[in-house]
Image 1 (tube, helix red, strand yellow):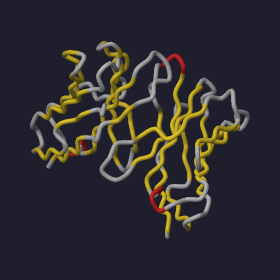
Image 2 (tube, chains in turn blue, green):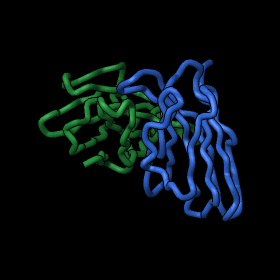
Image 3 (cartoon, chains in turn green, brown):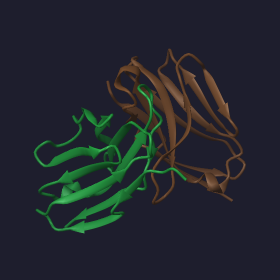
Length: 114
Length: 113
């Protein structure tokens, strides 16, 4: 059963702490997306990678967010320092192909910053 | 110009009825229009998608109608069932941006038995 796996599923942290979210894309997929979902903004693209290279991270606050793909089986999204406004559900999605890739979403990481 | 506007925000339909959700876009460079379905606590999942070279696509009870000149597209759910109760997102992407999806704000559908 191929699926995108995200860890942790839930994270509560204090303001100012570092948060790391991890994603294991579907084996063989070459594109990885990070989305953030909030009630106010809906689903926003933060960053995406193809063949582990970052293609677009324009949706990500550069001063505190960073996204990497250390290898083809792991993508990470870090927030340092975290702020209450970062509270959201963060989704990782993966796909295969060069254009109009169907995105397969993980179950998300629900982040609460207090 | 990058926005996709979706309506209504919420929708209540009786079992067996037709659910209709509408989306509009501005950027004519968009060339792929998927609909995603999301259940509580889950990630969105692709439901059905259309490209602008066709005006309609049907898969089971789900149909996308596409009006290129009006820059609008809609999702029709025929014979709506309580199990269809979920949040639906329309989205759009451009050929040269390799799968980068711009999502609408979502429609929370509730199908009453």
